[in-house]
Amino acid sequence: MIIEMYVYSRTGGSIAVAEAVMQAAELSGHAVELVRLKPGNENDPDPDTIHLPDLADASLSDLVIIGGPVHSFAADPVIRAAIRQIPGLDRKRVVLFATDTSPLDPFGGKRALSQMGEELQARSCRLMHSAVIYWNKKTRDSQIEELKHALKKIYG
Image 1 (cartoon, one colour):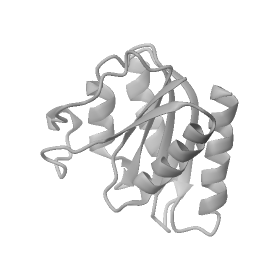
Image 2 (cartoon, one colour):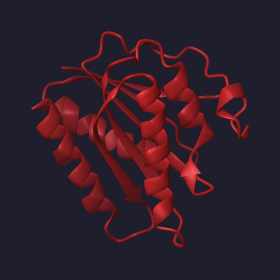
Image 3 (tube, one colour):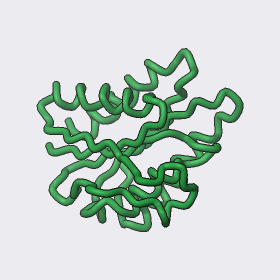
């Protein structure tokens, strides 16, 4: 299986999750390309004006994984922009994850996934699984393991 993974990380948490997921998929014999999203204007709050140059085309992938941080109790604008701009994403099977560092609001991650899911619906994608990784919780490692287990069920 060919897996395309698009990840944006502000502090390193989301990329750490992506690398753990990528390693597990590669050990299972799948080809994984990790695309680190690097916007030219990362502090722009408007996904419509964020430019993401050189996005890899997802059209040949069997599964797409998209992940990034929760920002201000919502999906990071860079992730929303990426979902809108990734070439070849239409009608793909997609897995989402969000990393949430807030100790105050456990609903920020769920809200972020909901917003990301709405972006996917606009591209006629099939959401296969979504997960929030609560970065500052003691259960973080088990949440990453649960994500890897869910992915293994999807790609075999």
